[in-house]
Amino acid sequence: MKKLKSIPKEELELMGYDDIAYLILEESKKKMKINDLFKEICDALELGQDVFENHIADFFEMLTIDQKFIMLNDGYWDLRVRHSEKVVIEEEEDFEEIDDIEVETESTPTEDDAYYDEDEVEEDRGDDDLKDLVVIDEEDESM
Image (cartoon, rainbow, N blue to C red; front, top):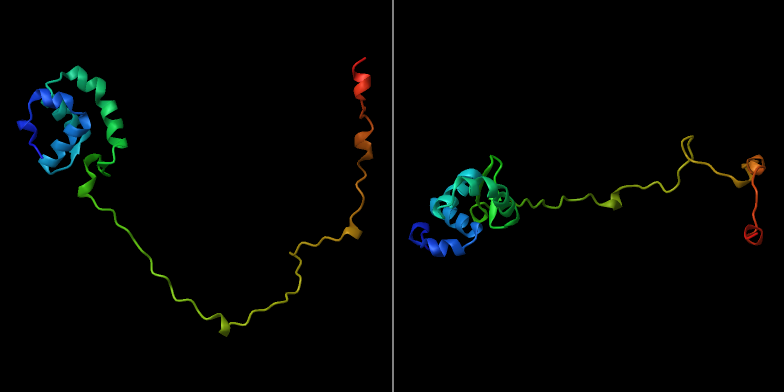
């Protein structure tokens, strides 16, 4: 890969901020804070402070979306290829043989068990709730 300083400004201007950031992080071989990284990009492109201030948020958003970069816990950014993810694979535990365990198939009901008997349910006496109900026939409604 080319060194950042060996790339002509005209060619740098055609590159995206993400490509330049990748070059900077790759060359420096160290993690960087976002402000320092974007400042180096602005310096390489000879952009002013106003561009830095107006586009730092866009640069941050671009880094968060681009899978080549990773934000570390301490607020630094680095290339994802330098950081491996720890994958933990849990081994299956040996399970006891069920043959040796007696399983009780019947249980006696307890007070906590729900009990429902249709014969014991009283009829709902909600007729009083309907005494003020008026039924309107569709034919009556059009008059």
